[in-house]
Figure 1 (spheres, one colour):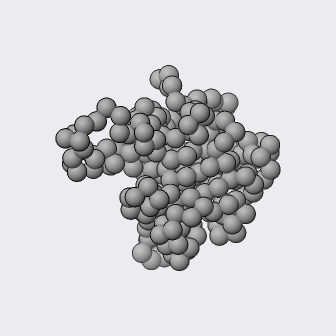
Figure 2 (spheres, helix red, strand yellow):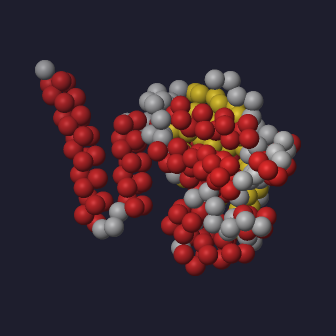
Length: 257
């Protein structure tokens, strides 16, 4: 499918998805929302691609969040019922679920503004590399809605701890790259001109691994986020390792014939 607000490029086992509304700092309008839903839905069965790099076009930032102007255009007050708004909100949040369930590890290469939905896209990625000009913000409360949105109440405290997550969601304050790295929101820091190179090098590192092993590892990490005890985590790991060991032993036996 051809996209108007996204650019998707594939080089071998590595795909690079670029949010492409640079004049709006890659803010998510209705079209981008639908295209992102389509893109991540297609990745669920894309077993030829091992790793996805997610980044934003332009110099100003990764993603400035939801495009509020676009969200209100063409709607009357009568059409803005709680039911309609809820359905659209649930559809938007489905992007985060698809990002977590796709088999590919996602590397977010974040520069400039990662606000609201942009921060959520980064959090839903598996690894976050931030340039030193990056700024993260749980901006939801600043526009008059609840401070916990788009999986931030689930993902953020798991990354930065409950107290820091609460502070970010309650205040909507901006968190610069150095602070994001210190609290665990960013996994690596680099200079702006090195961002895509570092993301690409990491993606190539992962691409050398077994795609199925990467898939199972992501499943195990997802399960670990929700595991209530070590037994549950071990059950998932034991299942995955049994699959992989069986595959390796079969390969070994084939080579011995």
